[in-house]
Image 1 (cartoon, rainbow, N blue to C red):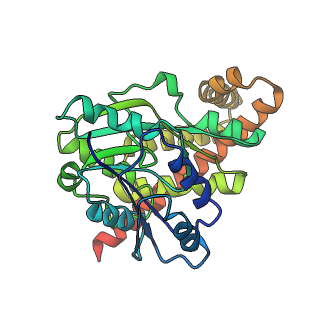
Image 2 (cartoon, rainbow, N blue to C red):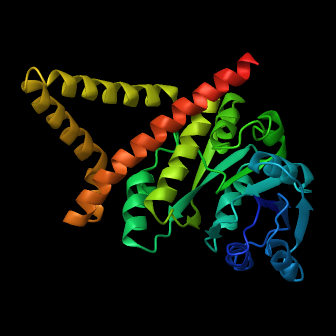
Length: 311
């Protein structure tokens, strides 16, 4: 049987650490090691972790820096060749570890396994926002799916060849890490049932901050730039149509029709899943908030990257 290390990094997670470690305790496949890297917390997180050390094989490391620094430290210090990475803000399905390491057991040539994550909403807002933003579990194209570091496993050799997590990025660092695996020639084996549960952001403010941060990271790393450019052009065309409408009314009609088509195309899956007039208004609002957050985030991240490169 292969030996495996679970890794995670954190800072000030006293509310989340207990439920996370409880979900590790419930795993049907027990980890041989759990490497936790603390980015110098000043709350009770470390004390809570220490209370679990008699029940779990925890290795606790203190290391200042962002999540990339923490994850790279954990991977470097892991004593086993196969590493399963997740986030402390998640709850692991009881079969997560067993399912994510199964491809390694079946084929020694497997180097990277991508798991999945599902939302665990507690409010109507969280249910609508997560349905809108997250990919449907049953309709994943495994050839295109980029794993999140909430649920991924890899051999240490692959982590080294990919160059580890990009420590110059504070935001959305797992996307360039996943792309580095692809660039290194590794195929992702999709473990559909290796699931972790993740609670969506609870309100508009936190929703905006989350997707602004993700997009800012994409801008810094010039990731998915064609998608952001296409969305920017759509909004610029819409603005031009509105301006022209002050002289020729037909342009306002075109702008309205284009907007309704755009909203319908992006939200129809949510309406089918959560029918109702409240869903219609909320998801329309979320589309606009998401677009504002992501477009501002991407272009600000890109600008900061360009300014940094000039220095």
